[in-house]
Amino acid sequence: MNSKNKNPAFIIMKRELQSFFTGPIAYIVIGLYLLITGILFFSTFFIYNRAELRQFFSMMPVILSFFVPALTMRLFAEEKRVGSIETLMTLPVTEVNVVTGKYLAAFFENLIMIAPTLFYILAAEIFGSPDYGPILGGYLGAIFLTAAFTAIGLFASSITKNQIIAFFTGFIICIVLTMLDSFLVFLPAPIVSFVSYFSANSHFNSISRGIIDTRDLLYFISLTALFFVSTVKVQQNNKK
Image 1 (spheres, rainbow, N blue to C red):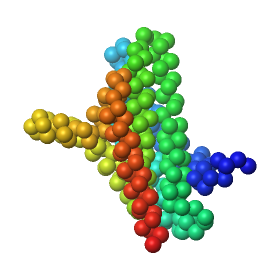
Image 2: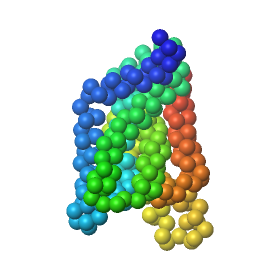
Image 3: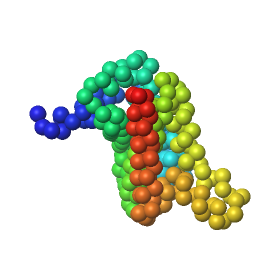
Image 4: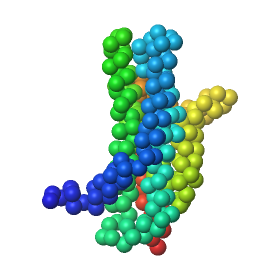
């Protein structure tokens, strides 16, 4: 057995992924996600007669604000509800191992949810001449956005035993970060410039235009790290 398989974080990740594929919730959430994104893509295709993914990417932060917490809400909340988290924490694992394993599983689950939308590129290529710069930027932005929202959803799940509360907590944090720049139109320009930096939508839109700015990448990395560390702290406090 290699060292990767012995790592507690990878063992936990494997367990979570197996649980993900054996339950119905994941398939329902992924099915709804593909239905909504499909409507966005094909409405642009049939109604406006444009073979592009611009509309799909413009709504992605809002859509992921809902669907990522839906996939992460069970990770800690369900284990707390049934009491299995106490058993897990008595094993030779650290809080960092547990959070890392669950985070990686949730991150891959969300990427699995997004992956089928790659077929939209094929459809756009067959029926049009898409600009691949924004498409590549859009999917790169989606990866960073998913990483950050996964950390937020994981944190929300760690602070409660109720999956519904975990979902709404994660959703509210994600949607506020997404819609933040929409509420700034009446504020002075200097304040808008400062507050808009904290808007996930603003940074995602920048990347999805094909503009790779290290400030945008740093924003998502910092947001992911903040909520990842916060989740570790919650688990450490719960163990005391």
